[in-house]
Amino acid sequence: MENEAGHEIADALGMLLRRSTRTQLHRRLTEGMGEGVDELTYPVLSVLARSGPRSAADLAPEVGVDRSGVTRRASRLEAAGLLRREPDPADGRAYLLVLTEQGRAAVAQLRTRLAAHITASLASWPPGEAERFAHDLRRFTAEGPFA
Image (cartoon, rainbow, N blue to C red; front, side, top):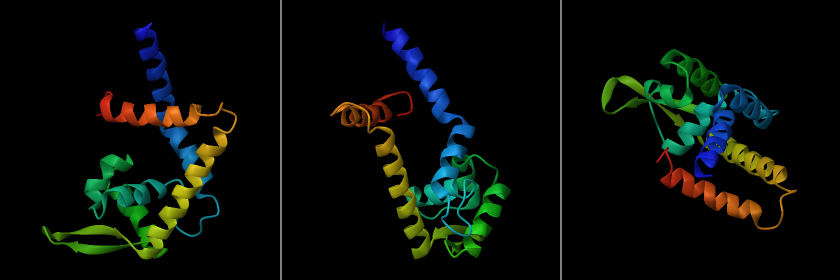
């Protein structure tokens, strides 16, 4: 039975981790967000919000594109006023990508949209089940194979 649960979880994770699944969700969340914010730039905003200032090279593995891909996305976000580049104090040749106030506001709006989308998708669940799932998912991420 436990192995069966492991297979079910692995299958569900496979669906969640697929790039096409994430891109589709990011497209839905960023709709109408304005210049520079779309399914391609969303991951850059999201990672910067979680981690703070980072170089394009440091962001690349988390965003899932190479450094030049991050740089192109960052340029769009910079043109839209959502991030700025600052000299990296640890490396005089490099720059850090930093969210602006406008960028932080956009991330807050995106997070609100995501939470509302999740809440709406769980509306038909019996009382308490979504809360239990949230608790178990938090535990899984803290103690499971990704910990």
